[in-house]
Amino acid sequence: MPIRTAFKLCPQGIYLHGHYDEYVRYSKAVKNILSKYAPVLEQASVDEFYIDFTGCEHLFGGYPLFASKLQKEINNTLSLPCSIGIASNKTVAKIASDYHKPNGITYVPPGEEKKFLAELPVQTIPGVGKVMLKELNKRGIYYVSEIASLPKDYFTAAFGMYGIDLWEKANGKGTEYLSIEREQKSISHETTFLNDVLSIKKIEETLFVLSAKLSQSLKENKWIASTITFKLRYSDFKTLTKAKTISHTDDPAIIYNTVKTLLEKSYTRRVAIRLVGIRLTNFLISSEQQFLFDDTFTKRTRILDAINKVRIKYGYSAIQFGVMTNA
Image 1 (cartoon, rainbow, N blue to C red):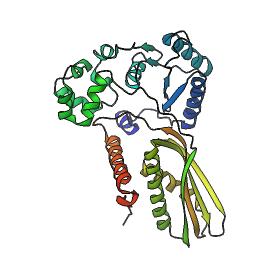
Image 2 (cartoon, helix red, strand yellow):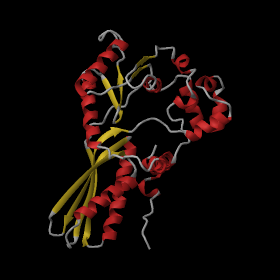
Image 3 (tube, rainbow, N blue to C red):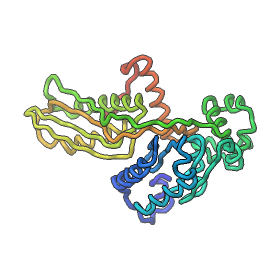
């Protein structure tokens, strides 16, 4: 649950800050172990990986045996537990990985996906949030088998494209192909002013536009980035850079607010600004998981995706974000 919700429920609790740099360090260490064995590897999040071992089943003595070997190596090397799901597609593998936590191995043989899912509650399906769960329960649907037994057209009529996705997942279907990380290490945009600038408002407006353009580039490539670097050059050509690592994102508002904070820390001289720039690094492939009728975060994600589609079709300038200012 969000921290603010937890605090309302338990204000007397002890709240500790996370250590994102440590999470990333351990994530990279796990990835290094997996990379020794994996022909194809996709990192879906800081703590979630997909591996395609198609054709390699005889090399490691069978999938469950090899999964046990991976578990032991990760635990012996990093003292981390991990759960592993083995299946013919990503959706079922993800559900299987959650089936026996915190340190289980679940193997779903090909052809038994629908049988495995049948008795699981509908909220087990990735993307079924509180709102979607309520909608399904209102229709008397509580288990995955109840979704699978109804016609696809029923869910198409009720929920549109999200209903189709839900029905296919309930029937054990999902993508079999992994997304491979791109070779590009960074993307950046910068602006050199025609006339040196002293106005903070003008600088912030420029950074707002640069953040939106970078967000668009991320979405077009299906990337999310976690390290944001701000570059500032004074009129006397002295140049400063400051960086901050956050949770992976492609949201222009998060990029902009991070850069705005870095600007406040960097702009310490009463000297005009000649250039500002933003660089994004530390990429992951954005998750393919769709969140069905869920929270505010999901609604904003859908809005940004819709904006992205308009820009792809009609050009970047076809739709713009407004800049909020205090009166």
